[in-house]
Length: 208
Image (cartoon, rainbow, N blue to C red; front, side, top):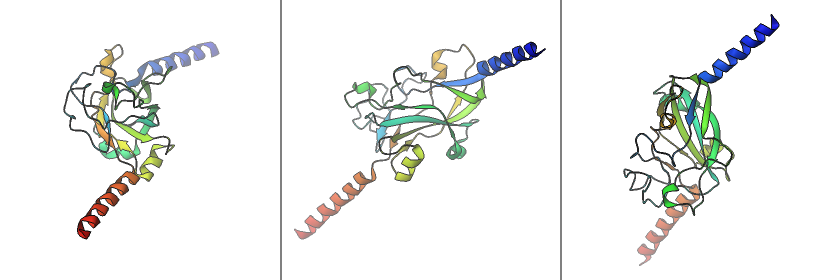
């Protein structure tokens, strides 16, 4: 009897595992269904080439620097943007690429060696929906996204919908097709320097 119960429990665990939803956490290096959408991450503001097909945007202000990291948060159900403040993280964070990376790769994070971009939701099954949000911050300055928000240096995508594909679906069904480009808020010091510079110019003009 105990043996039968053990087999039943193992079988239930396997079915539960098979039914768990997954998502591919990448914003570049793959071909999305909506291939012309911009999913780059920027410094300060989304660049002038935001509507251009990607990869290949010529914008110079895309995020690079291996201390910057991106993570994925979610809320169960579609169109739950109003609840995104209470979202939970799924998977791990990935760092962005070095400044020397190829032009087409700037503004994208890279999957660490030996890691997988496939994240598994513990409470989303096949066919269920979720509202996702990508969050970015400088891990050299802040150990968590919450700390980055408190420090005023962070970036977060507009919430977007995702439906867990059926088992055996094509690879692109698991990509975050609805993700769109967004910017990381500039460093407060940068803003302060800009204000100081403008004030200095105004002072010099008045003296003249």
